[in-house]
Length: 170
Image (cartoon, rainbow, N blue to C red; front, side, top):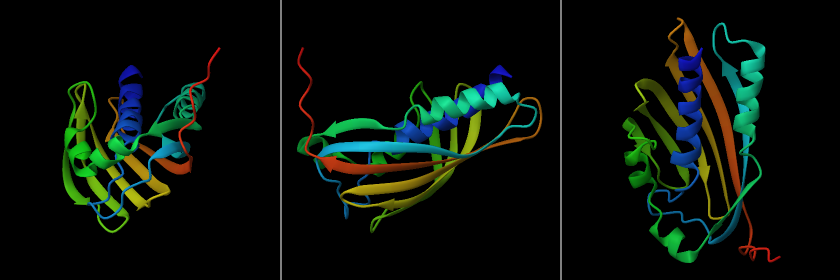
C-alpha cells in the first residue's frame, strides 16, 4: 500500500508543483503580479483495494493545499515560462516526457509521462489561463503494484485577489 500512496502522492506533487506556479501560456498570456489564491478540489480518486481511511487521508492532503495564497512580484511574473517548468518535471530528480504541450492563446492542453522515485504515471493537464484566473484539470493515471489502475483527477483554480498582502507584524 505504501507504493500505491507514492504513486498517488507523485500525481499530487506534479500537479501542485508543475502547474501551479508557471502560467505563461506561450508568451501570449501573462498573469498579473499580486496575490493569487489557489483552490484545489479532488474530483476523482480511485485505487483498487485502497482502504477508505487511506482514501480519506489522500483527499485531505490534496484539499489541504486549497486556499493557499501566494504573492508574485512583477519580476517573478515576467520570468514565468510554463514550457520550461513542464520540461523540469517534478522535484526529487523526477522527469517528464511530454507527448503534447499546447500552451498558447490562454489554453493549456498538455499530456505526457512522468517518473519519480521509480514510479511512472501518465499526466494530462487541460484548462484555461488568463491574466487574473486559471482553471486547470489535472488527470493522473498509473499502475499500482497490487494490480489494477490508479486514477486521480484534480481541479486547480487560481484567482488574482489584488495586490500582495503585507506580511503580518507582531
